[in-house]
Image (spheres, protein in one colour):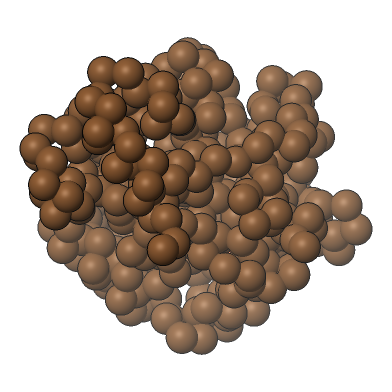
Length: 342
Ligand code: SF4
């Protein structure tokens, strides 16, 4: 019998598992505490569980692990972790330090199907979804290293999180669970290229998860060029569903806009963007493009970035310029890639 990966179960699911084994329900909570709060990753070391239960666990389940292959540290202290998964595939996670906050940017897939022109993650196509345990292991590794949870978790690493909806939602429920990581929903951000049916599903979860939508253009033709997913889920429909998300969850939706020189950074596009998203609780994060080595696209100068911001602000759109971090170690937005795929 193939053993089951224990970190793929939510607490409710694991309670059902232990019930089926004839073990008291509270043992599931105890095990979650040992796995996620104490970080014990060997059933034999879980000494406050009865030996008979440990033997059962050992027989039926296993604890998925990953290995750190490389750690790169940027001049601005951003850290990029390269992890090897049990099947030999590699993924990256990034730790970003700002003021006293630590944000972990995690991956949700190996590769990506969506092939946005400014992003390295999809350049070698898509290989597979990460399992729940592989998503959680990225956070668990950092938690063990720092001896505390990262303050914020952002699903902005490799992959489109809403394309791996079930595993991402399960992982969030474990990150959020008081019996496991106990990270507040408002500290968790899902960043999407705009998978409309999945945004609709997410809003039905009634969580206060932060939703961040990669827009990068304010008209369909340009957005379809930059982000081919726009051919399937065009701007107007996407904005409409974001509006509903903001209303239903009472959360502000963030629109990410990477400014690329001569492509989407004219003030005319800023005008169009303001018109497109005005009238509901949203804000814009402007990010200056981070060219990967060999990229033909370029970053605009600081005056253009500021002018774009000012235009949005005068139109009443809350706008911030997100400082890009980790560019020197290819850890910045859009630079994580799947070059290590087997
Ligand atoms: S920006 Fe996101 S959706 Fe687009 S290719 Fe990169 S990882 Fe995929």
